[in-house]
Amino acid sequence: MPSSVQRKRIRKTPAARHAEIVVAAATVALSEGLECVTLRRIGEELGVRPGLISHYFPSAEDLVAEAFGSAASAELDTLLPAERPDGTPTQHLARFFAHAAGEAYDDISRLWINARHLSRYRPVLRDRVAEQEAAWRGRLEGLIRQGVEREEFRTDDPYVTTIQILVVLDGLGAHANTDTSDRPEAVTRMAVTTAERGLGLPSGALTRPVDASTGPCAPSGTGSTAGRNTGPAGGRGTGPAAGAHGADPAAASSSTPS
Picture 1 (tube, rainbow, N blue to C red):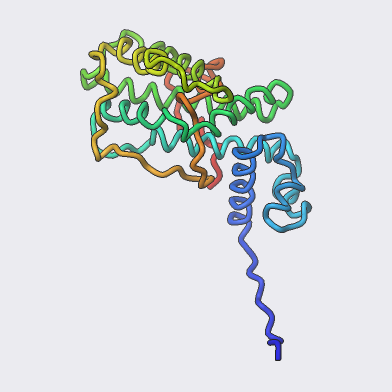
Picture 2 (cartoon, rainbow, N blue to C red; picture 1 turned 60 degrees about the horizontal axis):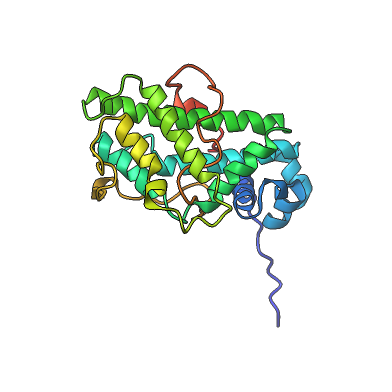
């Protein structure tokens, strides 16, 4: 005889529901593209009516921007954590390059390319892209300045060196949609070589084995294992400056939902 007891439906708090929607949207953005982030599509993903999604995001444009911001912030926190474990600036920078290479990050590279293209026509997304670029610049410049203060790095202008590194990474990552398996090592190492030269480090200083204390950490936010082929891609931190040099990265990455 079937049970007549019905399961009690648990109502989620507004904060929990908001976070759930953003995570689902970021996942769809990474796997299918920002064009697929619609109120109906995310409603289907969560098994709810589109009206519930629109209650939290009246405009689909807001949801698209939030999806991108969530995924991009999770990537930044994975590769350049604001709170770094014990280790030297050189070790942290070497860790960054070690985990910003390889096929594990292709999807996030494609997402950056996608976001920069769509941001030409979508002001809300354009603002979010600018925030994430500022966050990348601020976080990487902060690490470089720390290295200069500790006399590990030598550069007359940490901001300029930061931009040079990001420009090379962007150029390499722009090819995430193409087969780069035949690239010479000298090309794949261009970002590392640029950093070593710009920071007065000997060749190979940023490709030595990474110390265990600065080892890899799991991506947060979207739960995705996707990423990039040759480093942070699609204009990360190389667009027009969103403020003074060394802008507060925490403020710049405020798009990440709590």
